[in-house]
Image (cartoon, one colour):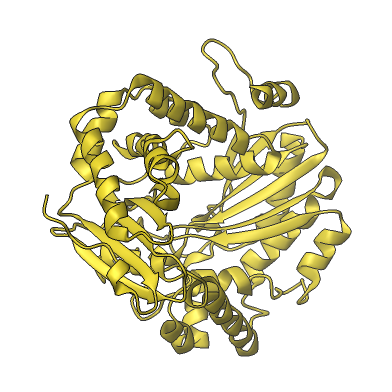
Length: 450
């Protein structure tokens, strides 16, 4: 409650009236080259966040040519026509700013946070690499960043305890031709095979003003900021339209059980199901189900596995919401001396209990409150608001989707959670992955007759 009161006092943009309605005023316009621009004025602090989403991620790649979107996340910091290599970060730091980027299955995000009097700098930097990146890219730069990405894959996946789990899950949840079948970071083979011409063509196809949305939020004058955006981005040429990506069918008709040996001390269980896309019916219900099962020390799985029975070190559950189809996952690390078969048995008991009887209203209320607190926390800073505005305009077409999003959760009753658990958490449509210490396959989850 203290956090919420602080947020309401410090953030005038968060106007509450008649049922705690959130108001995030914005100005939206589209440049002739197709760039979608959203401006949000907030004078709470003298800073501005510039947030650019290219609507391309690993889902736009093809089998045999994966990892390009993430590779570009690195390449875009290697200089452009009027920005020498190394100057992007140097100039922003000199102005008192910071920046970063991230890649997912469906978008690549670049952002800069600067004092409001330095707004022209990130606008210039982003426009230069949007319009003139290829003029500075060389085979040597591609090879250098290819090596960096390969090393990142080793550190984040291949040489990290339990690191291969997420890769194994998506490979087994989605068919080989599905755009979520491969990881965002790509495969070593594909990264090695990518030619300079391949990389150039990927940029020309997707890194376009007409395939991007730009949010400028913070201590701005919308009229003046609109003029500065037009000044910096209007000369960037549009490319061929990028068609919408269809949502291919992904369906598991039987259970898959996988055992992976790793250099770990404790076995870990992963249970995963295919679920509805983000914002589709069932998505919010499964979000709340995850919280009921594992959202805190009073949640069902944590209480039984970690506190009461003391057979697990930790447990998490989450709905990984994505535009072309989501996944629901439960992850449990066993304590020493216990097997994943024991763990799975208890998890299954709790899943069956939810299917037979809806959660108590107090459990659901706690889950909704946890979500609302997290929701407001994400919006406390200018950078969080800028990114959320961009997410909403990309995924729903409406930048100001805050109330509609939160209303999805507040409208759910316990029986809706029960119904979605019964519909989607099927025994015959899931992946059960056991990561066990090398030489200890006996600790893996064994299928039991129920």
